[in-house]
Length: 340
Image (tube, rainbow, N blue to C red; front, side, top):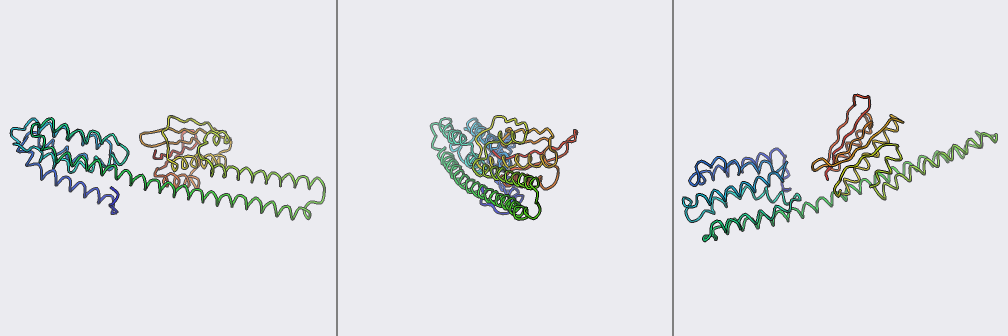
């Protein structure tokens, strides 16, 4: 949920042990109600909590199905359960509440509807003793409230992280801008000061001036490119057109600023390395959504080395990852996956 600061494996082990122990402790209660179904009820109580870390939405679906199943079992065995069938359901919901709250926090707000609807359905099923569902209903309300509170804290943390990443990227670009301008202006200044001593003929001076003009134009072009990145990181089409690469973009959702920035810079750095190491080679850039990630693939991307390290660092800074490797046709391919 965010408060655990210890090793991930230890946190997962603690969750597994606590949930399993709780479920096994409740097993005798379920055995008195439905002996044949007790193993299934115990497994359905444990499984969602174990899945919630890596697959929160499927875990929430499983938790909802498990809760509905438990209500059905209680309704079916109500005579043997006595007049208070809510106690095993209350206990059953304890390990599932964090699973449902975590799924709501991670964006599945629709889960709040069935979470609140199941206890209300229980009131109908167990009428006229519907008051026994007061406990589960209170637990459902607390679960939904915790989920939206966690969602708010998660959004605040994400926004702060995005601002920090964007600020760091802008600071780095500003340093690059300083380096570009400083290098070219120093070169122009040195050559301008020394030209009268190195060039005495008119043709030589013309050649010198032409070279100085080319250096100035190169400085302006690189400066303009960096300034455009500072202003806007959305125009991938212009970036690939400038590099002579083909761009294919699939259907994409609304992306966070950090994801857009990392996407732009990964493509930009890949194309820069292609120009350095494989000038003129046909290059394709493909961008599309894969599950909950955005995948960008650059065919004939940079060879192993510094460029690849920079791409990997950019992907990891945005919460994603990257891979690279040679292709049978002799080219190279870089693939990065970034969170939506």
